[in-house]
Image 1 (cartoon, rainbow, N blue to C red):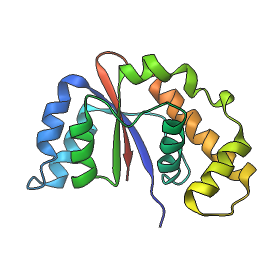
Image 2 (spheres, helix red, strand yellow; image 1 turned 120 degrees about the horizontal axis):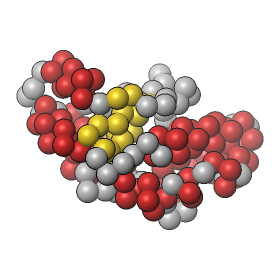
Image 3 (cartoon, helix red, strand yellow; image 1 turned 90 degrees about the vertical axis):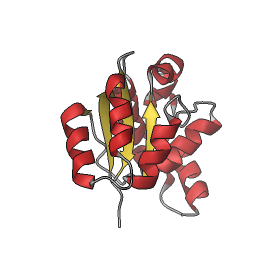
Length: 157
């Protein structure tokens, strides 16, 4: 079974209410309706969302840490109650890493070799590396949409 990913931009001012609606004793429909009405969907990656688990780890090893922010508590809560995973991308991530996230800075074969090593697979490094670069292109485009008034949520669904 494959996992999909979704990128949603949400105003910082709506995050507290989103977190309240993510409580496990609240109705799921209420949460998803709130998210739909108070955020906008960004560019999506059309491949398996599992690639982001590998990509985020690879980037962290390159000193591009996208998994920590001032909204970690929200990301953890959403990961535990609503999604397979959640990462909250902020204006600090944009300021610190946008240029480094340009997919042109990454070699597809190196990405593919990392993917195989990380996942214990033997996929064609060039092919899976191109998939990783495409995921990186989508990530880069969505991080570029962040401003001081919004956060982008990377959601594994």
